Image 1 (cartoon, protein in one colour):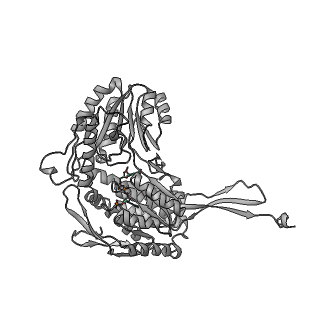
Image 2: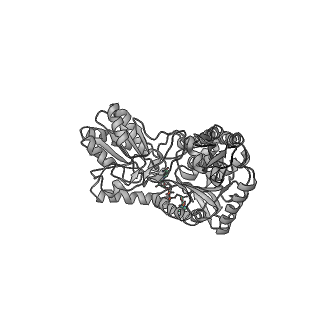
Length: 494
Ligand code: NAP
């Protein structure tokens, strides 16, 4: 681990060196107690420029881009092995950094290792194509690394979302500037240290933590940055897209969501109740794919909601270090204030509370940013609290009457990231699964992921896709090669 003493200032990765930034000092706090986990100094504007210029230099001179795919893949395999070798301390550190329960941070660490392993395999087996020629030449489609690319990430699942960008970007042969969320910088720093230890040349990975509106903006605008892969809120994503338009720079944007979970009349109720609870309340609802809009067939509605509310009230909210904890604290006090504001708004719009709607009481909760799992009903799909992303443990439930009514409501959102369907009828599942507008649809399951399967959103939920074998090409430029095979000169000039 990089640091154990919270009084010491943590170095960051600038221009191939581990050193203190020259910008503002900030501290990361344990959301369960408010204690300082680590202190660091953000990069200054000069540090940002230096890191990007050095990354470009490393890209051109270190030989990383020129290594054969199997050679870069071997380094990525070593990264995966190092993450696995340090899985427990990393999971503990991630818990301290963002307050997620330890059972969850262990999964995030395992997923980060698997991501490096997957992209190592994808890189080693990636094929370039000989395309059907239409003349006396051979045609090929090949891919080239882009140079310096940036990965800007949010605070909700740091090590997993950082690995999801870093692994394919490195596999592609690029230099990568990582800008983690200001409140959760630790996992990106750990990953950079691991990459260096695994054999990624110095300067190929830089980590520039700090305020997004300053550091993130400077990275996005820099002319040497050839691509930004962003995960975060929709308004930030649109801001980045505007800058990218001026630079003609490709971006991928993984943005917000307000995903519909649909429980049909013939659903297996035990599965559906557990699935809906997991979909919204795991990660304390701080998840882009949280199933935060629930539609239940009217005939089932009352009985279903009674069971759901009772189980929500029994969820174990508490100490993230306890293996049995299902919901930890929220990331910051400010974020909890925003969630409380949304619950008030829902009540003012006519909503009624079926569960939660307040902070838990007792010594354990005094110093942390805790909030109870909350269910609101009695609202319309058009209400603000049903349309806006809350990014917390708040579920809004509504009955529906017909399949047509269900689809009209489910698709009536600016977001289209994910959806869930609970039914025993495979024909209905097929119809609704194809008609619902979302990047990912889960049928009789929810919030399951494979790194091998593309992920991304429609509409205001994003642009582009991450994961999957094609994830590497997102960080590359495609090039077509024509090889002339004719012994005679081109006839036109004759
Ligand atoms: P955010 O405020 O948009 O921040 C995301 C990242 O962007 C942070 O590193 C942030 O830095 C940085 N940033 C802020 N302003 C910037 C700017 N002008 N230029 C460049 N970077 C800038 O989002 P958040 O509150 O951290 O995360 C919650 C949001 O992320 C939710 O909407 C959630 O749905 C979405 N999310 C989406 C996915 C997905 O895969 N679709 C996954 C997870 C989360 P600071 O730390 O300084 O703010």
